[in-house]
Amino acid sequence: MIQKYILKLTACGLAGVLTVGSFAFGAEAAPVAGVSGYTADLAAAASLPTAGFSLALSQCAASVGDEAVVASAQPKVSENETPVVKSEYEDIAVATVTDYVHIRKKPSAESKSLGKLYTNNVGTVIGRKGDWYKIKSGSVTGYVKSDYVKVGDEELAKKAGRRVALVETETLKVRKKASKKSEVITLVPGGDDLTVTDESKDGWVGVSVDTGEGEGSGYVSLDYVTLSTEYTYAESAAEEKARLKREEEERKAAAEAALKAQQADRVTSSGSSSSGSSSSGSSSSSSSSSSSSSSSSSSTESSYEAPSGSDGSAVASYACQFVGNPYVYGGTSLTNGADCSGFVMSVYAKFGISLPHSSSAMRSCGYAVSTSEMQPGDIVCYSGHVGIYIGNNSIVHASTPSSGIKITSPANYRTILTVRRIF
Image (cartoon, rainbow, N blue to C red; front, side, top):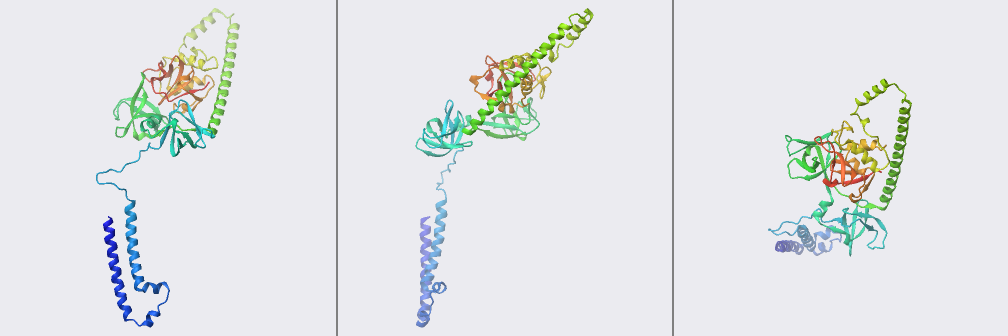
C-alpha cells in the first residue's frame, strides 16, 4: 500500500516537471516587459510556472493523503482473521452482594449515597477510577466498589435477567409441543407474561408453566407474544423513600380493611344469635321445615366459614376451606371454580382487599418480602401463576383444570419470582 503511494507521488512529480518545462519555454519567448507586468493577484500567480507545479503537486498529494486516511480507517484484519465482535454483556455489571451496596456520588466510601444496588440488580459500566466502577442503573448514575459487582460475566447476567414472553392476545394457548396440533396444557389471559425457557424452536418459544405437579415447560407461538429481557435496577434514594411511604400507606389501608371486615363479622354474628333466640318458641313443624331447607343448600358458599381475624393467618385459614373445588379458566368463584389469580383475588375480597385479576399484576401489589421471610397470607408469584402461602413451606392455589384448588409443598416447587405481603 505504501509503495502505491510512493509511485503515485513520483508520477505527480514528473507531471509537475513537464508542466514547469512547458511554462519555462513560453517564458523565454516572452518579452521582459510582459513578465514584469504580471500582477500579484491569485489568478496571475496561478499562471506562473512554479505556481502551476505547486498547484498540481498539492492536488495530487491531497488525493494521496485522502486515500491514506481512508486506508488507515479500515480495520487491520489479516486474511485468516475474523473481526472481534463486542459482547452485549461486556459492560454489564451485576451486583453480587447479599443485600445491597450503595452507589456513591464520588469514588469514595465516604461520599454521598445516591441509591442502592440490590442483589442481582444490573447496571451498565460507563467508566472506572481505581477500584471503583462508574455505572448507570435505572435512574441512578454513580460509583460502586468493584468488590461488590461482577462485570462482563455473560452467564451471571443471563441469570440476573428474566427472558419474558408478554401475551398480546386475549387468550393464549400453551401447548405441550411446538406445534398448533399439539395438546393444550393451559390458557393464559392477555396482558400476563411468562418466563421463557427455550428459544431454539422456529416460530415458537418454550415457557414455564404449572403442570399441577411442579414446574414444567410448554410452547407458545411467537405470533401472539412479544419477547424482551427483564432486568432489575438500582433504586435511587428518592425512589426508596417513595416506596417506603407507599408500603406504609398500603399496610394502614389493609389494617383498616381488616378491621372493617372484623366488625362486620361481629354484627353478622350478633344478628344470627338474636334471630336464633327469638325463634326458639317456634312450632315443631316450622323447625322441621327450616332444617329441610338448610340441608338442601349444603353445596353453596354459605356452607363455608366466614372470614375472621385481620391478618395473613386468617387469610390462609379461610383460603384452605376451598381445597378440592374446581379450577375454571377466567373464573372467580371460590365454590364453583376460579383460576389462579381469580382464587387469590376472591379470597382477599372477603377481607375487604381489592386485587387485580391478573397473576402478573399481582406482582406489584402490597410490598415485597424475601422467600426466607414468607408468612401465611403472603402472595407467592410464579411465571404465569400465583398462590397463597399458608405456612410450613406450602401454598394453596387454583392449580390446573385437572387438579383444581389444592395445597402444594414445597412452596418453591417452581421458581418464585416474588413474594408480596398485603397484611
